[in-house]
Image (cartoon, rainbow, N blue to C red; front, side, top):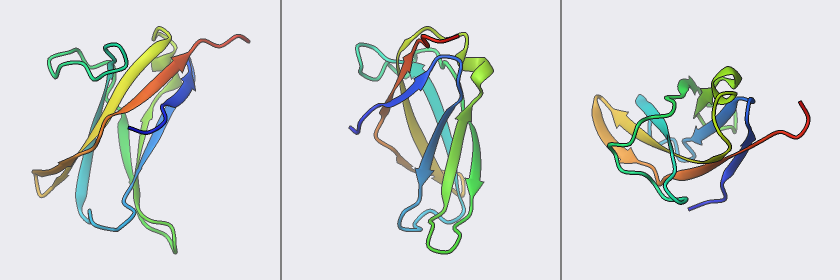
Length: 113
């Protein structure tokens, strides 16, 4: 698992899933964010905190294609500070080809209003 993404409560969450090798042409991506259970993924039955809006961004020059996942600041403003979990399901022609390793999101309280 990689270093947690850190955001402040009340700011947008944006996480990019990059197709470094160009292996996922025509793929769709779905993500869910859930509250972590002691910095570990919760069970699949746990409530979804947010479903990020996902936008595909095509490759440009030497920059690979990626999917931009965003949760609006107005949504995270109501979340309590803590640890959340996100992963991504990649599908091609309706068939799931991969589920990424989960990543942690740390949501901090702001100290300046």
